[in-house]
Amino acid sequence: MTPRWKSWLIGGLVIAVLGAAIYFPVLRRRVKRAARLQQQSEEQARRELTQPMVINPGDPRVKTKLFWASDTIDSTLVPVTAELPLSNDPVVRSKQVLNTLLAGPVDAELRTLPPDALLLAFYLLPDGTAIADFSEALATSIPSGIVSEQLAVNSITRTLEANVPQVQRLKILIHGQEVETLAGHLDLTGTFVVNTQPAQPPAADKVPAPAPGTLTPDKVPGKLAQPDRKP
Amino acid sequence: MGLLSVALFSALMVFLSQAPSPAQQPAPTPPLASPSLPSRPEGVSGSASPFGAPTQQAGLNVVVLDPAHGGTDPGARGTGGIRESEIVLDFVIQVRRALELQGFQVVQTRQGNENPSFDDRSATANAQRGAVFVTLHISSTGLPGTVRVYVNSDLPPVADSNGLIPWDRAQAPFLGLSRTFGDLVQGLLAQRFKGSPETVETASVRQLRTTAAPAIAVEISSVTVEDRADLDRMAPGVADAIARGAATFKPSYVIPSSPKALP
Image (cartoon, rainbow over all chains, first blue to last red):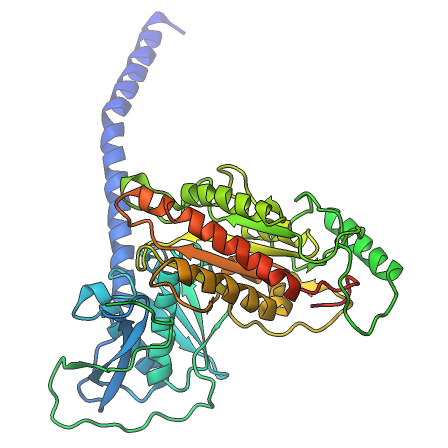
């Protein structure tokens, strides 16, 4: 090879290296931006899929019992009655009551479920086994401890028991997966009993003259724990 | 391989102890096994069968203490760096002392900051014969200064198959005894800690499900205390209640004379 061709070759290589050195950071920024957009698209798609079940005003309004923490007795559930339009379809009805439960009571201190938890999916098998798939926040944001985890699960099961008689037992998944515990204590590998009686269609318990958002706490406390708290 | 040898040894023990007895009698307890039994392999359902050569001692003599969490799992966390995994270890020291004063031998599922799996902790208890199991927790919520005792929720019954118990439902034959033990301890705790329940509660506690022994979970409220000393002050009362509860429970726990007989 003549010295002239050699210098052309070396010059070309140097230009290529310089070009790569200049272009590489630009390429890297483009790749990062594309990944971010893709993540946002996936996140947006997930949020669209998990949009809370819209309450259909056309559905008959029924007295709905929702179980949240008591403000007078430690670690106990109390039923709160709300007048909500609920579907007669048990799956839709379950989603409606669970999303209302997730939305939480007026007093945030009485929450049993984390505010950022979402119901991703709900299925009902012919044998009465329900599968509720929650987002990871249900497991990661809930206070760790037997009492808080039990309270959370009980609020879900008792709310379903009171409003969806077709649900006999409940299996809880976290982001589509079976997990060993909710937050380190409560066993999620099995199912939780919801209704022990054979399923009957929900009674048409219609309520006239809607008063939107009316919540009336019942006086009878839930039966989770033996109350022994002095005021 | 290890599981196979355990199963073969169990079958040999069952064969050698073919002396049918219509009534249960207090049996000599086997020598206290170190927690060296292989834990259940992941994804494999096996059997948990207590085994070991009988000794001259009879009745309940061993308490397995389980300080929950550990290692990379600190459990509940409070302000000021309070970690459940550290506090329960301190509690266990006092509980151990109180139990030894009552004449019990104590085995711990962890001594330091390691984090054995749920099955490993159960295996420690299941390796003993005639033991009870107490797992200690500190909650994130609940009325501070109270203590709750839990036993496992009802499990499907176990069909008698020559004393072999499915690992994933090992607690099933012991639920009644667990409730008795739990009620005793909870009653004593209620006397010491105002606001605590009078009787034991049920919950689907993972750690209890695979334990083949009377088993309770004791949860102290809570890590949200501003001063850790408030929790430390509870330790002697908790320790005394557990030790006295175990001592009171001891006559109730009739240990089957042969490995194949369930309680």
